[in-house]
Image (tube, rainbow, N blue to C red; front, side):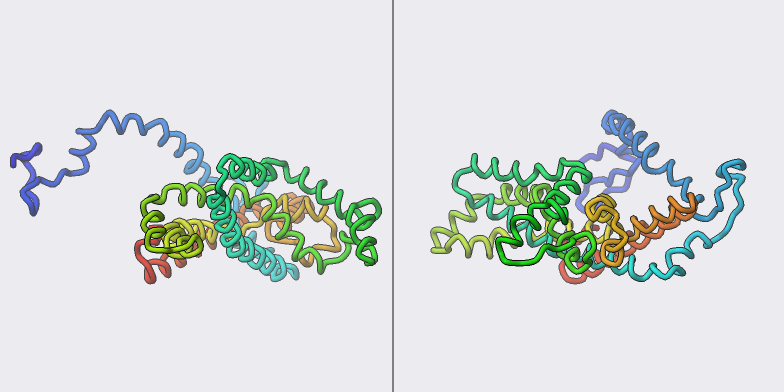
Length: 321
């Protein structure tokens, strides 16, 4: 077999390996199609990285970004030196662990239930209903929750609790309820969108596998257990790994808007993002905000890498990279 690139040494099976530059020359038109996307990615994703220098400077607006004095790691101190640092970090991590692990179970469960529905049009209607809350502004969600929990006129205090023979509750002053309320609101908003990728993964499973299982006498539950779940397991692992990268980030709207920024609820609703926001409002220190964002990004990236290494050791085929 004659190689298209005769100057190269023949490969193991007599086929000349194509060098990178030769491949670019051969497919130059296809690479030209990539250029607009690469330019957009460079402008939006890589050029702004120069702003990371803000995390190590005390910004003086009169001197500008590059003229402001360098302060080293001083901007990071507020995350670790303040009295609330431990509680906001704990809240951020624990809530995200609940969202990640319980969300995985709920999203897969909803996807399987929708897939198992015999009437596919009705399944589409249910899927649309599940997705609608995701497209609402978190401000709208917050006031919808407030409509239920308003201490004076809310549905829960004026109708539900009296019907159950219980006393009204001042929801925005009692911390013990919000460790349950916040996850409930999160799952109500995000379950519809979170289940979409699993619905698509299940739809891609070869139907002949289910037919063969039916012939062998397997019921629907056995098919889900031995065909559906093992087939979508790589997707479940990838989505979990991607979620691990955001474990130090909190949904600002969820933790700030939904509790109505009530100071009485800070012990259970304050996360790194809301803590930084309030600190920014009081001090207007851009360096502090950038330091917090950089800290969240670096730790999240490291957690993705270490989690991926752990997954690779268990099942190399399920690893993200």
